[in-house]
Length: 175
Image (cartoon, rainbow, N blue to C red; front, side, top):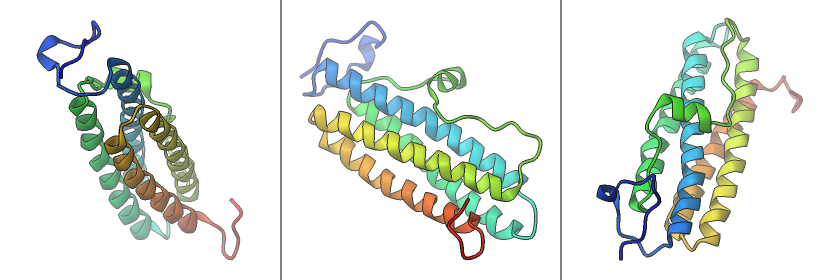
């Protein structure tokens, strides 16, 4: 069953779904914000990967490369989920910059421990946003998107944990 579309969706992109247009809009909006944040976090993680220095260079460089790959892998799944529901997804860097809630870091130099802590906080922020998006999915009877988000929440929590452990002071949980 096809649904009525908003003015923003071309008729050629009318994907059949049993979800209401309102549900598609709410879920797509939540996922597009997550998608923008995924791109922002991917680029920040890559930036820190490229610019990390110091005695733990190799370990941090490798960890940030792995994490950036994992973050980037979520982008296609998020965007395709929006399309499966009949929504439209982000189309440009300018649209990402309008939707992202992750702050950019354009500093010339960031000490390695500060990089890890900043990324840890960003990952915590994204996990919380994913939980809110999960609620939107639950409220709109979309278990498939909720299930996808559950896996992404777990992956994000794993990144947070690794960043925390790599950045903490010897024998301390303090920042």
